Length: 170
Image (cartoon, rainbow, N blue to C red; front, top):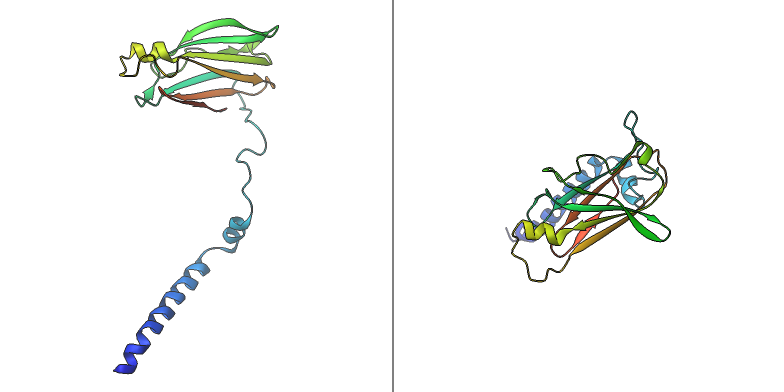
């Protein structure tokens, strides 16, 4: 019986080692090889050109403070001309946080530098959000460059009273 007590830890270790080796054998060789490769960008070929969908620039504003689409957000949309941003138009986002129409489409969709100015201070005041006065963020500039007018660009913008982020979608 004393010998059995001494062998128990060795048996447990053998069992655990056997299970680990068996689990490793279940993972395909390709998966193990992929795990060893360095990570590559998710979009190595560039933005998506969607067949049948006309090129356009769209925006989607999301209020992360309330956890909802930013309905009623005013956005001033401008184009850089002669080193100054010239207002093209102002839009107010709909119930789903998007502009009713694309910001640029058809003949208006041209290469250039653009700015979206989000009036988040007015937006949060309109929602009666309990924020410090004066608010930390007021007007948020989002500046983008359109190069290839054959591509569709979608701008999801997430914002709260203290931060914001945006990315290029398609």
